[in-house]
Structure formats: structure tokens, C-alpha cells
Image 1 (spheres, helix red, strand yellow):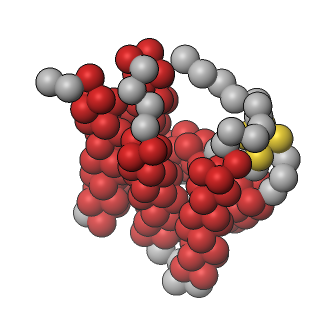
Image 2: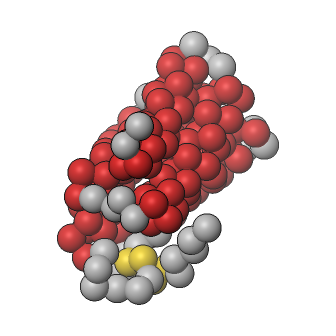
Image 3: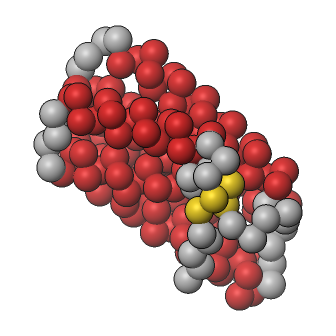
Length: 165
């Protein structure tokens, strides 16, 4: 197997677990959906580390990672909370949340070599925070506030330290 494929397979595992989260949410298996998001976070942390260690970083891998991240940490958390809370007007907020995640990833792909820190909160953080909302069964108003904070922080110019494995 080509070394480059190893990192891409790990990225696909991130995407697969994001999709498992969505499918689990659709079937009202919220704990499984949250666990799948946490698993996606693990694979997202590993793919870049593996690519750097194997010296196989590529534009293709970076694009695949961003697309996977949008599904796993943008769409999947939005679907999870939208179905969990079952409040129809949250849909508007989740559309803005997903668009903010896409904006954040696009900006990251353009600026990644220009800053040593992240500009705006990394979208991957949602893969940890949103499952906690489910695991602790937080009230809709708390979930709504956390979604708003996440949305604002992703598109903000606040600097976040890069943490690498």
C-alpha cells in the first residue's frame, strides 16, 4: 500500500464516522451519534499527524480533510442537535452554523501557511462540544447558546493555539 493512502484512509474514517453520526441521529440514537463524533475527532487528529510523520502531506489530502471536517463537525453536529431538540426554528441557526463552518475551513485552507495559530475556532471543536450537550442532556436554551458561541468563534479572528499530536 502506498504511504500516502494511509493518511487518506484515516481521513476517510473521519468522514465515515461523521456519516454514522448523521445516520444514528436520523434513527434517534443520540448517544451513538455523539460517540461517532468523538471517534471522528480522533481520526481527524490522527490524519494530519500521520501525513506529517510519513512525509506525505498533499493538496489532495488537505482538501479531503476539509470536506470530511465539514460533514463531521458541521453537518453532523447540526443534524444531531436539530433532531435531538426537535425545535423547527433551530433550522435557521443550524444553516448559519454550517455556513460558518464552511467559511472557517475555506479561510483556513487559504491562510494556513501564514499564521502559526488558528484564526477562528477550529471546526473540530464541535465534534467534542456537541456530544457533551447530548451526553449531559442540556436544555435547548443551553444548546442554542453553545451553538451561537461556536458559530461566532468559528468565523471570528480570535487566535487559537495549534495543538498537534
